[in-house]
Amino acid sequence: MLIQMKVEGLLFDPRSGMYILLLHQIDGTETLPIWIGKPEADAIALALGKVLTPRPLTHDLIKNVFDGFNVKVTRIVITEIVDNTYYALIYAHDGKKEIAIDSRPSDAVAVALRVGAPIFVEEGVLEVKMADELEEWLKNLKPEDFGNVM
Image 1: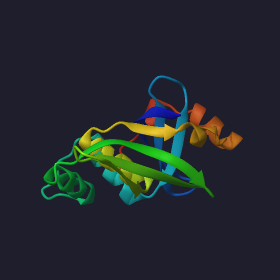
Image 2 (image 1 turned 90 degrees about the horizontal axis):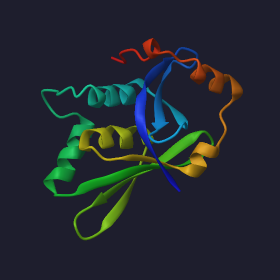
Image 3 (image 1 turned 45 degrees about the horizontal axis):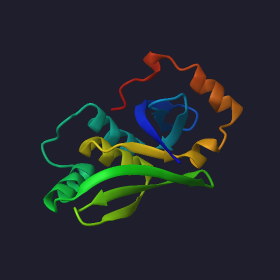
Image 4 (image 1 turned 30 degrees about the horizontal axis):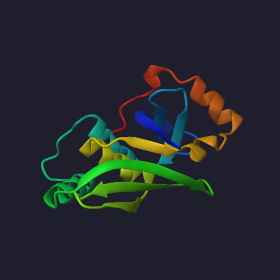
């Protein structure tokens, strides 16, 4: 079963030196943190802030390619987690058939934000339990913890 999510924000994790893409269930309480690098966080932050760059960056290029071929991104799905690595698919439709494109979740989210596609997570991914320490840390987040990534 697919669970629809939205980007809650980006956080910096000082313990790992990485960023956390925080997804939150649209009609529920589930939260999914995904650790990502700074370039990936920057790409997502640009999309969240609706920042236009003078020239297309990689995810803008991907959007332009889809648009140029008249292909619609219908959704992205975070499909599984294996050995602490998340996997995702970008679903695209050309009017005749739908194809699934393998992607890192951070790239899939960056594209979804640019094209306005919904973000989903397979229910089984959410069933993978987080460590108690991380869960407690996430529960204690305050709005001011969601700072500017760039």
